[in-house]
Length: 220
Image 1 (tube, helix red, strand yellow):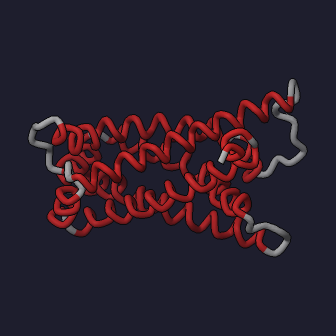
Image 2 (tube, rainbow, N blue to C red):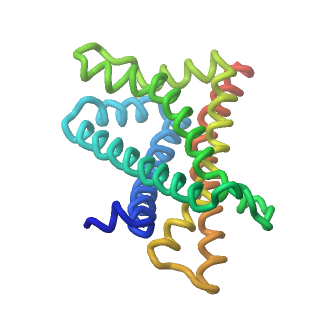
């Protein structure tokens, strides 16, 4: 187990596995958000199920732990790579979009982290945390609909955040599976295609909610 933390290969493996775990959570969260477009009652039922129950608290703790591990490994690997490159930190002959995402994964990660802080402040703080503190939480559907219907700036902020996540995932998904062992001339183009599909699917599912309720507010 020592090599997982003290070797670059071990850190990449831990970061990849934690990244896959976070991607699965994003798929779940995006699917949950999509429910709101069709039924506010069903969405509130899911929020109540995932409130301050012991299983929700355990799940939140595991998710937070996975995020911390992912960030820690990414930070250590970034510092290690910068030290290895020396003054040639940005040297690269390849200027494709994918390579841009690869070279800026840590910066994209920081943008994602800032967006996550806004997200937690707007939703998690007013729902699960408030309930954990012994107060009555706000209704989930009202929070989401009210935010995106009344404050268009938040729709813009969330879409920018989602764009950063998309770039992060388009590189991160195939990189994770490549680290796990799926690589080579045959698998590389497949993994890049799968990465784009997964990242786009997740982001479209997330983007539907703010866009839908922003447009709904303008029409009605």
